[in-house]
Image 1 (cartoon, rainbow, N blue to C red):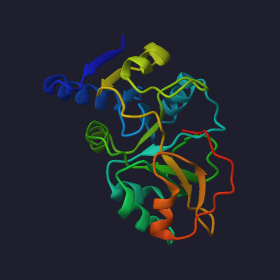
Image 2: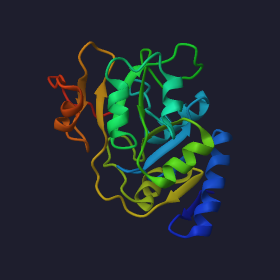
Image 3: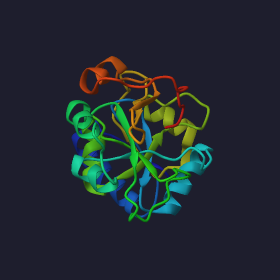
Length: 221
């Protein structure tokens, strides 16, 4: 049976975070609120859990799962390097709605899907998400919806789509909007916008200058 916690209540919030962290360690799935939309998450280093996440969404390995982190230090450990622009972007926009695609640290034993040696990283600006991530470490997290359906903006909406495939639902109330994060690829010589999202590209240009925007928007994550 799935368990749902009203995180606007102090006692339920504490109990929910404890239960969710334990579920993640067991390789189970949890739903959590973020500063964009609700996410479905699993331990990033448990391949079977990531496979379960993709199955719950009805999504293939060709759309690899992004990773949420609770600290910049955790993010730095997951990548080969942040390149010439990564640290400035992190300093300016994390925690917040900016996902950065970097070359993954080749020593890591994980399987996020067919990521071709890259990882999409973000630190969300949401206290419940950050508290959970600080307990669990990096989590593979995708939007909490069935593939092709609108992103969930409430825990009830997520539960209606994902049902018993998720062990714990952390209900942080409705999201302010249904706009996902902006995705920026840092694996090319010039940073490339892959998805227009909650962070305007003009703000990114204000920090790093030129951003290539000729690619089609990417619907992943």
